[in-house]
Length: 307
Image (cartoon, rainbow, N blue to C red):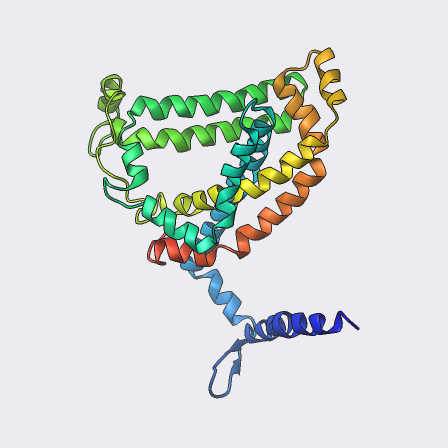
């Protein structure tokens, strides 16, 4: 009896609109006047609508970026906070602070960071990093992923090994591409760019990035604030789970000669497997349901994502 009011509310505001919307999909629906039944014509028209296919592709890309960038970093950060020797409480508070800021405020804040002039916060940082800085940072992440892949190869876990290799090269390409405006110039032959590459390694980005207006960077620019705001709460959940792993497991791994990477792969991940699966489902759902308003605030809806 106590649940009936809540169930009626959910049924009225969720399932009735869902049912009505499903019926409307088979009509040439008009708010005023008679609606005409058209069967599956509305769905057939979508198959020939390139904008719909482009929107579907962008939605898949966005969901993939959100899952990769908001699912793995909290786990990595939790391991880091578990191992850091000093200021643990301070670091936990600092990383959790973005969670107390509402989503729209976060987006407005980052929109100012993404200002497309030389006065923008991110542009000030990037314009002062030479090309070799981006290349070295990309190589660092690639080296970390290949180190994990090498340990997985040692244990003949081929599928996770190839996933780490693929992720490493994707991260390498993403970071190294920030150096492409310095190393490769428009209307210049590829051979000439390669020959001039050693001297351009110490040069800086020639002009400020238009983060939210450039179709190549608008999508990732909308995802990064979600990573910044969501890393803290997710990290604390994993950190609490890490506290529950008995020290005996780590001591047994040390006796067997396990490296730090082995402990992460074969002690931490198996122990947190159930929690990781639950959080993965939550991240997947959020990547499809709770992003429209934030993207609208960031871009104003005026940017077409790159194909």
